[in-house]
Length: 351
Image (cartoon, rainbow, N blue to C red; front, side, top):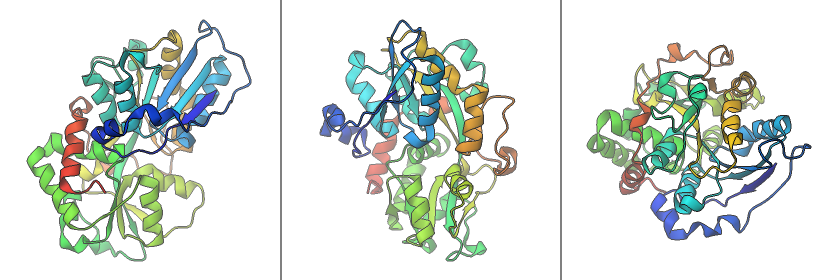
């Protein structure tokens, strides 16, 4: 299996276009993994663009390559970066499969007609709300948005009931956010769906007025809260549970917002077959593999995410979704990634 890492670039799709994505391959780091030769997919090489971190998805891609004998090449980058790269490359894109950290990016590609069709039998492995109605993407795992806080610096009565409370002056200078992260952008898109652009803009501007510290992603926020650099941070649940599983001693805990609050939005990671797929059924096989019992158990036990297929239970360390009473929205409404990023930038949260 081959992999390359795309350098970090500013999160805005518009800004990315300005920088030019031809540079993505300049610093590519390539390694080989898997001991078996290319298999029966007519000798094709399967090219995967992954917006998920290598440490989260890489082991499964290596397992797929080993078990099938299919040669897999992976390009890693941020979800928005990979989605824009596919759009920029158009019908010249070598991508066969796109793995997204969040649903907004696949919605962006779906809106632009850049995705193919996931087979019906694969779509049927998950609930209706966890795949696109037109079959252009399918969910892989569920993640819940939460608020991480420093247990040394924050008292229980300081914990907000709603994410909307974070605009209160009591949180001035105390919050960490990752405005360029796909999950944060999907949280904002979800807010747009539920509240409309005017109220969403007001929230973002209020959050920006509280002088938050911006970070590259969820891990950086979690670590910053643990150091006491900030007292609160908006992240996905599984980063803290991974830390616990690794035995990291950190003065941090998760706060789940009140039932149905936007701060507890459930997001899915997703997989799509790109319209330019020329690897034949190998692309379909990989997407199905990621929804196999083996892969879903890996997600549940190793990355502490919520599996989406029946018969695989979430880790006992995780609170059941019906207990967190997290908010679900129609992911088909999460398109308009450009508009979401424009709202974030206009608010002053773009770092």
